[in-house]
Structure formats: structure tokens, C-alpha cells
Image 1: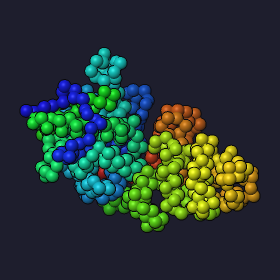
Image 2: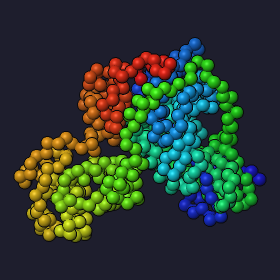
Image 3: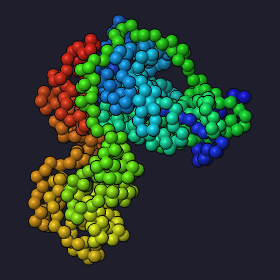
Image 4: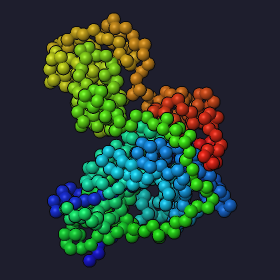
Length: 547
Ligand SMILES: [Zn+2]
């Protein structure tokens, strides 16, 4: 008997998978690329702006309009492919994927089908099937209390998002548990963030994950029938949705039923799965080559440019942490895969604390004691504990001049009240027998030394601030602003929720033209503005003037 999830199956999401069954999961990740303009037209990308103000004949699909591929999106696609170790197609083509939906004005989406930009590759333990480029659909807004189509009074369309460049990353079905999926997706997110190709913000939809879930008898080689969970927008929901779907499928199979191939929506508030539609096969989309676009031909120059912009990626950083610092594999991965922890560790090591803390001890304090005292996922560089203060504290513990218990108490204070009042005050620490006076050496980061300068004769630090000190948005999105040659246009953009716009309107200091929102961090110094390093023809491919 075939059974779908239409009844609104309630997932037994806390249940462990019985040993007789093995879940098999593959992920499909849509990444909005941080170009300045859309995939096939010159409209600026936007977020949270007035609806339907970033549109043109091309992205509205008006008759007679012609698309032109965004060269920077192709460049970002190549960077992703190189980072994942994919085989890059010397020639890839765009196809039309035909389906009718109100958020798709052309009646088809331009995507890549038979010849994607990248094939194969690997990230961590998971093989990559392919990476291709496509355009995002517009956004349907359902007016009503629920915000969902069911029970809404009306639906309206905002075409601002329509045509945003996407890279779709498809994995092989190599994942075996919800936790592994979430861990791996975090690694992918860190990798993409390091590459600077997207702001990978799941809540804002710039990183969206679908999961293909199936279950088979343990030890079987053949795959079970899969169901696809759509658009999960947080790591927690991804885990919970997959867990609920595994539980549902196991239950169906144990009763002797059959799983139906379908597309499901997971509602985290009710922990329920509902069927959106029966899953389409590729032939349902009537793919055919897009006649208005020439093939994407990759030449050596484009590859060289993409290679030159590759930063150190998390996997390579983990390897370096093991080799250079002698960290354990687990610790090295933990710190490298959460870039902000790795940055903090490196800033602490560079702080020149005396006695010098052993790297492994410092790593343990960063990822364990400190991270455990902060909000989940918080960047320690934004906390009150300076890297230099933690380094000094761990140095004292390692030299057995302060007990672990006492150091934990000091860290508690530093986290809640910051170093200014507590860390440098000898009287405060000596009162509790916590602090052995140690002359403070100059640090790599001006902040730490400055804080002590009023109380000791430590020389003031002349070195520039370390990378983690980059300014951050004061609003809720906490996007970082690196000081890498791009200037913000005015302090008024520093208000909550506005920073995305501010980043979009940053200008190049050399030529004062708008910058790509992600032209920062690892690719510091590379100007993507139209007046520098850009040509109108690349690899036989016309490019959009402002991307
Ligand atoms: Zn447009």
C-alpha cells in the first residue's frame, strides 16, 4: 500500500531510528550569490526594499526582452567549483525549465541541466554531485494571519527577488543522520562565507536547503523511495524535519506500507509534515536549451582569476591547525569549521601573552569554556572577552599559577562585565588569590593594550587590529563590515535592519562606484567595480555592465 504524508503526519521527531533501518539523505542547497545585479539583467539585487522596485523587462519576462548572463555569477560559480574540487565544464549551457507558477513570470526558469558548470567534488565526508547556476523565482506573499497560502485572504507577488543569481549545490546521498546533515551544512556555509560568494543568511533566505530523505533496511545497497523536504531555513528545523520524516518513513515501512515519492513541507511549530505535491520527474519540466543565451565558455584567464581569489578554506585551515599548532583533529575541525572561533584563536595566539599558553589549551578554552558561556553561534570577538585577555588567563592556568576553577571564575566575570573592570585589576584578582602580577607585553591588537595602558607601563600597540575586529552591523543581522578599502556611505545606515542596504551601497574608495556586497574579507583589495579589472567581453560572453 502506498502512503503519502497528506494527512499531516505527525513526526515522532524525538525517536531514535530503529537499528534495523538506515536513513539515506542527500541535500540540495540554493545559495543566493552576492553579485551586485541579477543573473540575466542589470537590476540591482535587493532585500527588504519596496516591492517591485527592482524590476525590468527582462526579469519581468516581457515579450522581446533578452537575457545576458552575469559574468560575476559565473566567476562565483567557478570559485565554488574550485573550492569543492569539482570538475569544471569548459562549456556549459543554460536550459529552460518549464513550469507555471505565479512567481515565475516567464513560465520557465533559466537553469542548467545537462551541462552544469561543475560536476563532482567533495566537501568533508560528502561527495558533491553537481553545482549549477540558475535564477531565483520572485516572492509570493500570502496575506493573512498564517502567512501561508492555506487560509490566506489574498496572495501578491514581489518581483524584486525574481532573477537573483543562485548556485544550486547538489550532494550525493552520503549523509546518514539529521545531525550529520546539520553539521555538514554548517561546514558548507562556512566555506561559502569564506569564499565571499554569498552572505549565506538562512533566515533571509540566501541559503536554503532541501533534503531528499529515504530509508532502507540496514545493510541494503538499494536506495529506498525518497521524499523531498523543501526550504528548511534553519539548522534546527533541518534536523527536526529530517528526523520527523525518517520516523514517518520507518513507521510506514514497518507497517508493510510503501513510501511515495513526493515533496513535503515541514512545519516546525506543529512538527508536522504535509504533502505539497507529488514529486516531479525531470521530464515533467520539458527542459530545452535556452535559445537566447550563448554557452558559458570557461577560459584559462577566468580560471586563473577564480583560483587567485580562493582564500584559505575551512578544510585546509583545519589541516594547518593540526600541522602548525599540533591541535587534535577534532579540535582543529571545530575551530576551523567555525571561522569566528578560528579567527579568535589566532588573534589570541598572536597576542603574545606571557606565560605563553599552549595552543591546544587555548583552543579548548576558546571552543569550550568561552563559547559555552556565549549565546549559541555567537562570535567571541564581539564578546567582552578580548583575545589577549583569554590568552593571558590560559597562560597562567597552564603555568599552574592560577587554578582552573579560579580561572573559570575570572572568565565568568570577563564574559559578563568585560576586561576593563576585572581582567587587568590586580587588586580584584589578588583579593581572591587569582592573579599573579605579570608585565603585559604589547599585543597584536590595539584594543587589549589600550585597556591596560592606564594601569601599567606597557607600550602601546602600533600594530593594526587583527581581522576579527572588523566592525559589525549594529542591527539584528550582524553582518560584518571589513575595513578593506570599501567605505560605508554614511552613518545613517548603521541602524537596525538597514545594514544589508548599507553594504549594497558601499562604494569603492578608488572610483566611488557601488561595490559588490561581498567584496570584503578574504578577497580584500580586489575591486569588482566596473571601472577596474572588468571587461565587457569575457570568454566570448557579454557581461552585464554593473555586476
Ligand atoms: Zn531586471
